[in-house]
Each structure stands twice: as C-alpha cells, then as structure tokens.
Length: 258
Image (cartoon, rainbow, N blue to C red; front, side, top):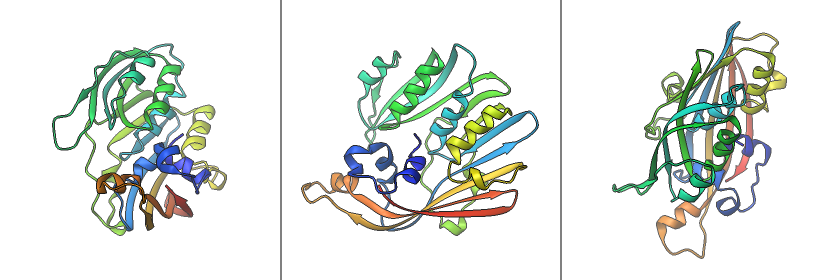
C-alpha cells in the first residue's frame, strides 16, 4: 500500500518508527513547518490513461500499471536504492542483482536492475521494497503498457507551498495503460480512494497535490545519538490533499502521526 493511502486510512499509526517504517521513512527529513509533498497527474483519452508523477509516486504508478498487465513475463530495468543491506530480500524474491554499498557521505546501497520477471513477483517486490528502498524501474511492453522512471532521486523542494510548480515535478515518473473500465477503476482505487465518489462522470485531467504541515516532533528519550534520534522522531501534523479536476478544486485534510 502506498504511504499516502495508508495515512488516509490510518491517520494515527501506532509506533510508526518501528511498526510502519514504510510510512515513517518518508518524513525523516521534515522539521516543523509547511512542506511540499508528492504530486501526480492523471490524463484520460478515448484509448489510454496516462499517469505522471513526482518522486515518491513512482512506486504507486508502477503498482497501478503492473496490476493491468496481461503478459506472463516483463523485462524490467533501472536501479534500486536502499538505506539497508537487503541482499537476502533481493535473493528471496528470485532476483540476482548485486547490491553495492556507496562510498560517498550519504550511506546507502544500490543495485542495477535488468531482469525478466512476472506480474506476481513484481507486485510482491513493490510492496517489499517500500519499507527500505526506492524502486526506480522502467519497462515498455507496447505504447499503451509502459512505465518510465528516472534513475536519480531529485533534491527535496525548498519552495514554499504557494510557489510550487507541479508540472515540473511530475516529470520524474510516468505510466501508460489502456483506457478500460477495469484499468480506470484500478487507478481510482489505488490513487484516489478518498475522492473517487466525488468525481464528475466525465473528466479529462486530474492533478493531485499533497502538502504537509508538521506541528509537533516527538524525540525518543532512550536514544543519545542525535542523527538517530531525528530519524526515529515521530512527526505529528496535517496532510492537505487536493485534486484539480479540469480546473475544479476539491480539498481534504487529514491529521496524521508518522
């Protein structure tokens, strides 16, 4: 489950630093204040549905398109970036990627990806890697079934919420699928579960934005290392979520603990 969907469904996660690291890891970098979160655009024509997203939506776009696959095998390529040595997990999923530790100031692990896999394994790997990693992969089966993701994670935006330029940020990843009733329902269920009942019957474009206001940071008392203390700290605040449906705005707010 994508971390924003989990926040919407369970705003008050219990012990998120230990039990819900798939959500908690997305808030490591935030102090108190207002911050720009990920954005995504859905476009619909007579024949295809196109998704374009900012960083932190790449796993959801991948999940949506993979759910529409009918092919038995798919060739994927890209890169996996992890904060931990997950070599055993990679092996257990049936992949032979070599995970290498970085030598720079930021310690992480990276693996180059070139594999042939199947729908079930790909969906399993998306969920497994959400706890520790960024899964930046691409595939191209045909013009109406493909995913493209950049291999370099962008720097966090320093702009204020009111200065955000969504169209620039949503160039990080994209996905295309056939416009069928099943595929459209999959998109709405996974991307817009909280807005789908409010959508008009006919629409062409939806832009989704997610912004945060962090009001409290609770530091762990039993940790002395400041860097680790900050990582394990619990953030409390509000998620401001809005959609622009062909220039009509609908907004929702959620309190959250992450």
